[in-house]
Length: 407
Ligand SMILES: Cc1cc2nc3c(=O)[nH]c(=O)nc-3n(C[C@H](O)[C@H](O)[C@H](O)COP(=O)(O)OP(=O)(O)OC[C@H]3O[C@@H](n4cnc5c(N)ncnc54)[C@H](O)[C@@H]3O)c2cc1C
Image (cartoon, rainbow, N blue to C red; front, side, top):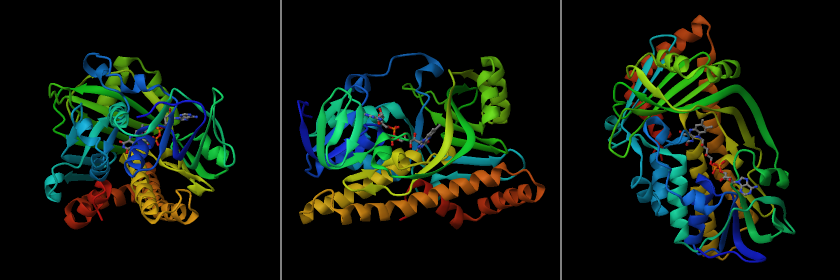
């Protein structure tokens, strides 16, 4: 890692050092490009070990179910072993059921001849692992610096007055991407009118290394398995997506009342919920940029698309973008093309847009299917789930798709 000074110029500049932008900048530097990474937060904060707390408060409320394909990418970048050296939980099974009926589907890694279906990792831990790898790379990190403007001709302006230029600028600045706005790339978006409540819990029974998800007409509730450093497997991270009114009511409850409602909502599948951490709520909105590329600019991760968290695929789609952009820019470098070559960027967009749209449409279909209360639809989804559960080839195909191992 090199330090920053006055005006700088790079082959490629990545704006946003979250889970996606930090992985991309690491991969690009490994291909030999001169790479700059601008991140609003300071590296000291991102690299600091987590503050020790006890019990449920020890876990960060934001976690991600990292698919096998994303883990492979992070491994190729040299960051996955760092992730595995810290707190994480691989899960071998997943159970999904309809709270309004008898339909239930069970996925098992053993049926897929895999060791796990994925790994639950706290987001900050993934970012820390990537920043540790960046610290040993040629990436020029410009941290604690916020971007305040971008144009193709004058480059990126920082709030402190500095100017940074590059052949190609990549917007990895998250769902509310300013890079996307400054570049004039339009989005198609709609409000789910739902909020996701996240927190950590401790349950009476161990989670059996299983991800649990119960659907109800007002939204899905997921219990994602966590494991403490000492191997305690009674912790879960919950993502409870509910219609906005219901989510507000749940957020306003006293801790004990919330704990009771949560326990009932998961049908005491893991016995009593014995402790609940502080809760956080995130408004849910589907957002998709109509184009991912413009003259001298590309978008990746949440800057290009955000989807409902019901299948835990947001970051995984972002890692799919990273892999595709790395492959296209790697090929461009071999061929001696500039990183902002229009055909190179167009190929990246073509590869990613279709796949991301398919996943977004599937999430929308799921959400619609489970939010309908009419008897024929309830019958259809319960019968469908029972039927699917017995139909191994199709079920395994769906699981492979979610794991990112379907190619
Ligand atoms: C409740 C919930 C649960 C989820 N669960 C899962 C899951 O299980 N699995 C999964 O795959 N995905 C999940 N997701 C989605 C996942 O969290 C996101 O897709 C992922 O965090 C996006 O990463 P990103 O790097 O694109 O954006 P971000 O994480 O938003 O990072 C953007 C970065 O850019 C920086 N930045 C922004 N603006 C500027 C600026 N002007 N100047 C400098 N820096 C800037 C920010 O500081 C930040 O570090 C979930 C999402 C939600 C809401």
